[in-house]
Structure formats: structure tokens, C-alpha cells
Image (cartoon, rainbow, N blue to C red):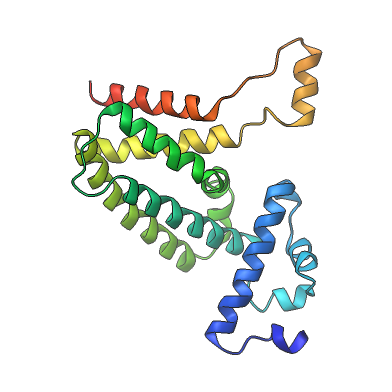
Length: 213
């Protein structure tokens, strides 16, 4: 095992990074981000911290890569769902877009900590690559969305930005936090009932209507 961890080829290094990202992603899904450390990631892998340091120096490097993977998946699904030159009604657009948002919930959960935490703790070189990948994909998508619902690319870009940030907030709201649930009970405030398919579709449809005014 120890010899195997010492990746010598680029392929082996990619395999190790995939193992690292898989372990980090599992931890993110079951514990607060603040409680995740390189030590907990290494322990989850069955590695020593020293072995983990052969591939990364901060946990944010790992989560930037995971976010990038999720981002690519989301944009790829959106570009497929809205083919170049397509034209849809506002209602159909909202339904298609909602399906992609829900299918890529992980991306929006990571997006919630991207600007405030992850991007603050990585090298400018790694962040530059990430930003280029984002803007390349966003540039393609705004063209597709503009065509689909007959708006300018500038408005399509703003619409995409608005929906992304709504989804990141929606999927990471604290309504399921036990402490908050108890605090709300203490002041007799009923729990918020959420319906993701309807809530997200209504929000998208509302924003399309607003942006077309």
C-alpha cells in the first residue's frame, strides 16, 4: 500500500487525486466544512497526513478541484439541455433548467463556500485555471440561453448568475440544522416547508419574466 501511494506517473497521480476527492466529498456530505481537516481526510483514506501532503497542501485545493468537477458537469448538462439555436417557451425553459439544477445539487452546495472560503485559500495559479474554465463555460451557456428564450446574451448571463446564487443559497439553507430547528420551536415559528421542483421552477420563471420586461 505504501509503495502504491507513492505515485510516479501522471496516471497514478490522477488516481490518487481521485481517491482524495472522493474521500473529501464524502466528508463534506456528512459533517460541517469547518470540521474537515487534512487529518480527517487522510484518516478517511487510511493514509498518513504525510502521504496526503505529497498531493495537496490545503484542503481548499481539494475542494476547488471537486467544485470544478461539479461545475463542468453542471455546465455540460445545461449545454446539452439547451442545444445551440434552440427555442423554448418560458415555461419549458424553467422546467428544463430546474431539472438540471436539482440534478446538480452538489455543485450549488460547494458554490456556497466557493467565494468566501475556498477561493481565499488556494494559489493564484490554481484559481486562474478555475476561473478560466468557469468563464469559458458561462460564455457558451449565455449564448445558448439567449437563443432559447430570445433575450440578449448580457441578460442571459445575468439570469444564469442569479439562478446559480439562488440555488446555492436554497440548497445550503440552515432549516435542517438541529439547533436552528429547536430555536424556532422555542419561539413557536413553524418549520419552513420546501418543495425544490416547484420552488426552483417558480423562481426561474419569475426571473425570466422580470428580465424580459
